[in-house]
Length: 294
Image (tube, rainbow, N blue to C red; front, side, top):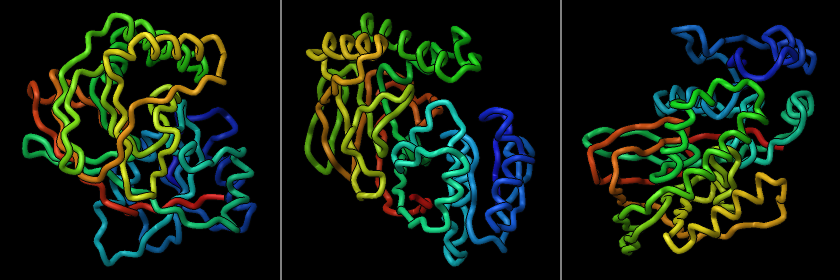
């Protein structure tokens, strides 16, 4: 079953062309568009193909997590067509669309952990990460300044990096109350990110050693003392210098309690609002999703 975001990618990734490429490899393919209401995961399929970006993957996983325990596990063959594609990068899926389709014949299943978060009697989940500080602020400002409407992926990523650099220079660190597997790591930070993938947002690699299937989350913290160093890193990245690897204060953990001196937090690419200093409880659930990887 091909689940497709028709607004992602270019003309070569139309419904017709994608189905043609898939069926040429001997698969029978049924189609669903994420833009159509009421689409469902079919019961007779062997695996799902997701053609879109990180947000599209999240929509499909949300449906899979609601399936009954006794229903068979459906692996996902990912065709990354979005702007950032942080999930695909975490899975080392980097070939062309045709090469990726070819790889499914010999692919192995890679388990992918899911982070569950509880706050104010609500429960939600994340695949990439959850965070406070400069990233929710960046996401909000991208919308406020109408930069989300930029169609060219490279220009959009650059606009996000430029805006993030400006934010870092003016952002005042906030108090974060943080407990990781029973240990206290509270302090003042520009950013606190609970990550399952290596990169977030505009392909910023904050947790280069992260493995989304290793049963642990990476907790990335940028303290007040690292403000200038982080701003310099962003400036070098904008200048095209990718050689410098920035190492952040990073912890590993499975059970996390966190609160922030502020109200906005992001879950993957979505911003949610909670009351000031609301405590979030995060629990990692291992291997709930499977992807087909080369």
